[in-house]
Amino acid sequence: SFSSPEDASNYLAEYVIAKINGFAPTPEKPFVLGLPTGSSPEGVYARLIQAYKEGRISFKNVVTFNMDEYLGLPATNDQSYHYFMYNKLFNHIDIPRQNINILNGLAKDVDAECSNYEKKIKKYGRIHLFLGGLGPEGHLAFNEAGSTRDSKTRKVSLVESTIIANSRFFGNDNSKVPKFALSVGISTILDNSDEIALIVLGEGKKFALEKTLHGTKNDARFPSSYLQDHHNVLIVCDNAAAGL
Ligand code: GLP
Image 1 (cartoon, rainbow, N blue to C red):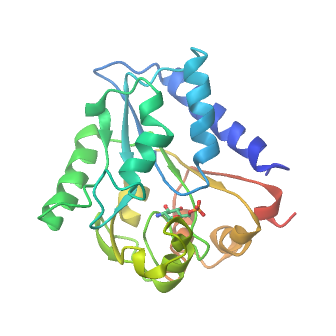
Image 2 (spheres, rainbow, N blue to C red):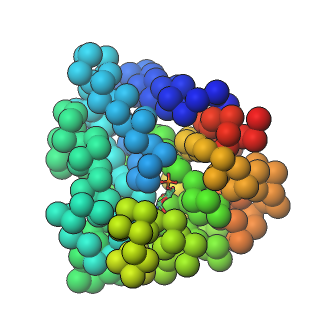
């Protein structure tokens, strides 16, 4: 836990850089990185870009898998997670386009899109590090309350509280927030990742963080409690989220 969101973001960015550089990825053996959206990881992404500009990190041999995408939003929509990722990270670093994987929110065959995503992850074997954020009510990616431990990449319905929380990006108009999304599942994250690192910032996340750490394990009402079932989770937070 850090006294400011800046220090927390800085720590996680340096952690990611050290992991990638320590792995020494090659085209044959890329570093596989899972990535979240939301406001929480923005500071981490800004610092990764800075480190790239300083020549301290290259993403040439990094393969990324994003957690989720709204259903029905084209990549050109500035609220799509495609747009967010290119705007906040990919356009500013040297990652090859073919190394970037994001679920297609306009897929005609949603089931095929989701099962192909699972297959692509499996093709790489492991996700070496999966970064994540935390929804105010404990959602992970778009795994809302009720998501099961064995859930895989699939179409999900967003719950009212998520729609309200995310409406700030849609001119505070709930009706503009997509009602469905494609999301990796709990199993996709837990069973494929060597390590999971969450960035949790602000007082609004205090309740969710408490439940994640000390709530009942594998409580479907708080999907982040499934993280207690993983052997290697790092939580980077600020003191406001930690309730310190
Ligand atoms: C969205 C994303 C989640 C993210 C959450 C929290 O719902 N699907 O992956 O963790 O927002 O966002 P923020 O970091 O802006 O609070």
